[in-house]
Image (cartoon, rainbow, N blue to C red; front, side):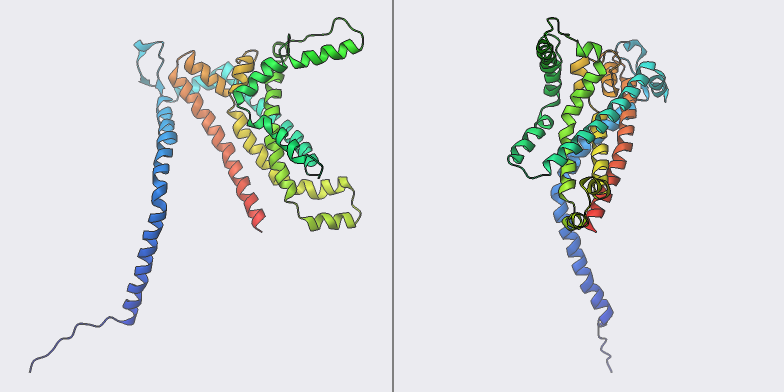
Amino acid sequence: MTTVIKPPTPTSGSSRTAEAGQPGQARRTSDWARRAPLLPALVFMILVTQLPFVATLVISFLRWNALRPELGKKFTGFGNYRDVLGDADFRSSILFTIVLTVTVVLVSLFLGLLIALLLDRNFRGRGIVRTMLIAPFLIVPVASALLWKHALLNPVYGLFNGMLTAIWKLFGSDNPPQPDWITNHPRLAVEMSLIWQWTPFMMLILLAGLQSRPGDTLEAANVDGATGWQVFRFLTLPHLRQYLELGGLLGSIYVVQNFDAVFVITSGSQGTANLPYSIYNIFFTAHDYGRASAAGVIVVIGSIIIATFALRVVSSLFTEENR
């Protein structure tokens, strides 16, 4: 008698596994099809940002001075970092960078809040006024610095001294003062230029926060007889807390890296050299590539710390908005 051996029939469990595997494979294929167009951008970003930073990190551990080629390129470990942090001028630039950043960000936030409160009201021509107030932030930073240096702060034909002359002549004085703002107050000149440039940025962020306030809460406060100051103190200001933090942190990231205002207005003289300008001097004046790279790495680390706090604030802001 011959025995016929039949092939094993698949069980219901194995068939379900096979059926489940096909949609999973199709899903993975679909995911790769969506991500593939992004790969060139990712590769470009790595080539443009990460590779130069890795090269800078490597150079920061080398003793490399173009003015002394006989010394060659030698590995020095953390010697460049010790030299940079031990330099009194570099420590002074760190201190001025901190003072400049804190001053510009705080004053810009205060002025931006005042302007945002005014623009939050309905009045004729509000769109035109808003566009005009945003204009300083849209100007190229170098052009903005040149505008302040020549059109506003120049002691001979600047607008500020022209206004002082007109005011003194109203009181009958024939010898009005003509102060040299950049020479007498160099730090103030740089700070005013950056405050003028960054106040519109803060105003836009805070205005968005004001327009996202819950209307029913404001109506309830008005019905209960709350004054304008009480509404601002107990409702508006707590609501704007995260927007204030966001504006302050984003402004700090950019002001720390500012180079144009210092270079154009004062050229880093009279204690106005900040970190980017100090790195520029070390690299292009002293041609000490190792120390300049070490200083750049220090600035990047500081910027990453600030950016980490900024990302946390942004994520908490989105979480709060989605509740």
